[in-house]
Length: 257
Image (cartoon, rainbow, N blue to C red; front, side):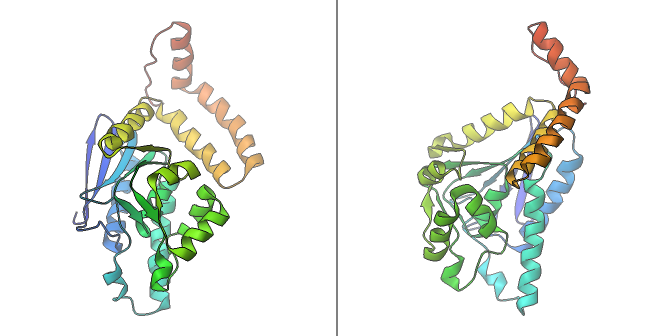
């Protein structure tokens, strides 16, 4: 792959964005991301994913040079639609996806981070959607995800001023799960990934599906589905193993079934 690489260790897959100098998102990179998730979907050995950037930034925006090759409005719409399709897939993925964000996550970079299930950021990271500085608007559903995390008023301010927020403020607003020092970023991200990977893949998949109902504001449907999944998890091999291990005061040995 030209714009990223990935590796697997201890049930965790690391996806490394590699598009120097700022890991700007471009269509080929998004296509490569989609291909990696095709593989991860079928890889039962991988139980958690960490996305991070090489160099100084997580991803400092979209590839503006690519924009000059798009001929018309329909072409821009198609570019945005494909990005949204891939980012929606990440958001709804059956395995937890964690963004380890350093340096900057701007424009498409923040949209990618927001599509992940969790975001760990450093204190001085800059996060924002500066598209209006170019006379544009976000194209990968950033205008929809950002208000979900920081509220409509703050999202409007960030969009109209194009001013980024720090990692510290992102954590305060709820955009980031944790804010840490640069030195602690990967330890924190992989620590969470390891805890998630130690759970049953069956219950993790069900839990992520249930949280997705809440994200969409579908409380009644989600609560109804929870009762179904509660029974499904209980009847699974791992559900029975977890109960038995608790009674026997030992660590459960999940088989992901």
